[in-house]
Length: 441
Image (cartoon, rainbow, N blue to C red):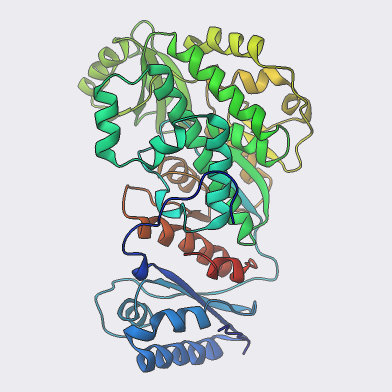
């Protein structure tokens, strides 16, 4: 049996953590040489919890917050003693159980999945800010480059955001905040995972997420990516407002139902297509599709992304963006904009990056290319559940984790999701920096 138990930021000052942080979730891990030894370790953890009770839960969780990497591993994420004991098999309110898994000799490599437009929501990942120092520093870096208001808008209470919108916030500022906040969350969450010891072997970004991947792979400087987003927001704001529509059908079924001005924005799989259009044409197409029996879901966006409607805006961004040095990627980039692994020459072509917003997304093709290259542990590194859910539907996807809660919730919910993703990677055989994980809070 193997087990070890352990007993200033730049930029704007972080805001205070959410109230109720005293009951924040905690990750407890263990390992053993064989299944019988794992059961003994788990019984030991139960004894510790019963002996210390609720008042000593934090101390127990700290002591059990790290373990030597053994062939049989276990993990729980719990916020109190009662929940932890229930997960470990004692009677209680939880319907879940502790996760235990025997790992192979070599864990599957990690690919980070970085979501794009349509995934963002108010206060996304807010519970990770001022909780994890790496996440906080990375988010501040992006939002500081974005300029006045982006950080404050992200952290604002929903009522404050509603009041600002009601009094006519400039459309360009709304678009800019939406784009850069999504970029910041994707980027900061990826940095958090790396800070926790995760070593990605590849990146797959969708839309804005592909731009994040370019920065993480050292193709593009962070400052240049944020500048590109600012220019795109200005150009998109000059166009007629647009929207996007998710349709539960393949593209061949959908094409015959399109009205003038509506274009295919994304090919997500054999049973999901995304459409986009400026003006009211999209609503007419939605009515037609719904009447034909197709399920449709509007996506809240300010523009008809990934269609030719953005081509002129993207061309003007390319003209206005200062010439920047683009480097070969340090990690493989799987690109839904090309539907394959991104060639090195394309990665170093600035028109690829400036034209992302006008290029249709071919996610299923990119996933086929990814899984053709091997088995992966996929981690959705941004707001979900869209991208992660689509990856889970792929027949070759065996392990997909989400590092952020799929629906709006409390700060503790965000923390639980990140810790659960770490637990999933630990159970898949990966090493983690437990000291960094235990330093959160």
